[in-house]
Every structure is written in structure tokens, then in C-alpha cells.
Image (cartoon, rainbow, N blue to C red; front, side):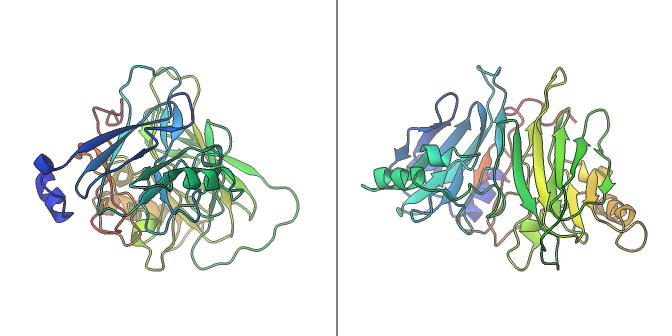
Length: 344
């Protein structure tokens, strides 16, 4: 199955391809090495170290903004106490000899020069200089997203079919506990105003907060949208059973349309691990109906082809794989690389 997927992506034989290992973070805010020269079919293995970084494709013109249809590893949190591994990893297969520009979308890491390139020619120094002179907010899952402290990420969320309007008065932060002893978001449905924030606090073992739709609860909005809408996604947040501090992910509410969320960890959505903002109390589009839909579908539609080049999750994958062509994307975190990922 794995080899057939590689063939489907048009990857050349591994016997003819080279592998480049790139360390992400782990002290200095940099990719090491900062660029490579590779041929089509070669693979780039990004190994993520402390504390929470990404490998996200951008453009030479906008180094710190995610490229349309560009690949994105998502956030890869690594505890400061984890110095010996295992470490999460992501793999990208080189498609051609054109330059590929990459940045870390955490907080202002890109603006501090945390960028990487494949086949940059003589342009890497100019690319890095442009990044360090860029004052545009780093994008996490939408163009207006900004990251906060290392332990948390802030992004923005917009429901379908409504336009955000200005808010007045003070905003409220709604705390939602994710996981722990049960496969739930607590509370599971909230009412929030424009300008409010929702802070997901991740408990044991390894969960996500990933935006979906009412019609397709167990698949990311980014994968199912026919209009190119990009939904937010915290990425996997691994938390040890002995942890005393917990990662957070904060979403700002942009309108009052319902927002639907699920955990993309294997099987969790199918067991009813879903969440909503501004869902009606009763009726066809209530939170209860959303949860029932997720259980009915059993989370089986967790992997699909997308025109937005976003990650899908699979338990059987041996490496996180990324593709910048927007088709046949396979993305899975390795159980042997990410401790505790499949404990639940």
C-alpha cells in the first residue's frame, strides 16, 4: 500500500533518490542546513526539535506568508525536556528543480530568519533578508493569524456564510479542555461573540482541535471546502501522562456563524470527540446532531484528496508526507517517532 501511494504521487525509485536530513529548531531558531540542492524524487526529512516549529511553504516575494496550495507540516510541539528523542518528523518529496521556499510560522520565528530553501540558487541570502525585514504577521492557519507565547498559538476562525463585523465592549476568553480521562471537549458547545477567543487546553494523551463542517464532521474544512476556505488546525498536541503543564491553542471568533471542530486522532471523532461554537440548542444543525453525524460516519472519512494541499491523517503512515501540488496528499505522524501518539 505504501509503495503504491508513492507511485501514485509520481515519485521516482528510492534507489535513484537522495535523502536530505534537516533539523528544525532545538536551540537556535534555524533549519540546519539552511538550504539544499536536490533533484526531482529526492526527499527532505524535517526533524523537529524544541520547542514548537513548522515547515511551511511560502514564496520568495512573501517569505513569512504561507503559499497558496503550499505544503505545511503543522505545528510540531516538542517538550524542552525531550533532548534525546524520539522527535516528530515530516517528509517532502522534491517535484522539480524550481526553488521551494520554506519558513517557520510560529510567532515571529520567520522574521528572525528561520527560513529554509530547496534549490535556491544564489537567492537564499536575499530570501532570508526579506524575511527578516518582513513586518507581516506570521500565518498559522489563516492570513490574519498570529502566534502568542511558545506554549500557545492564536489564530482566527470564521464560520461559513457570514461576514465579520466590528465588536464593542470587552471580549471573553472561553477555556475548553481537550482530552484527559475522556475523549471529549469540555464544554462541548459554547456561545461566543465576535472578538471573543476560545482557548483549547490539551490534556493527555494526544489530540487536536481541527475545524470541519457539519456535513463532514470528521474531515478538515480545508479538505472539503469548494471555495478554498482554510480551516484552523492546532496540529497534534502530545501530552505525557505525567505532564504538569499543558499546551494551548487559541482561536479568535470573527463572526457568529457556527464553527465545527473535531479531534483528528485515529478513531476519536468517530467516538464523538467533537466541539462547536454557536451551534443552535436544538434542531437539525444542533451540537447533538453534529455529534451524532460524527459517530454515524465513524470518522472513516479522515483521508482524502484536496485541492488545497492540506494534511490528512492516517495511522498506518510511516512518515509525515507533504506535497505542494495540491493532489493526493498523504500526511501521517509516525507512531514510533511521536511518543504516545496512538496511546489513546
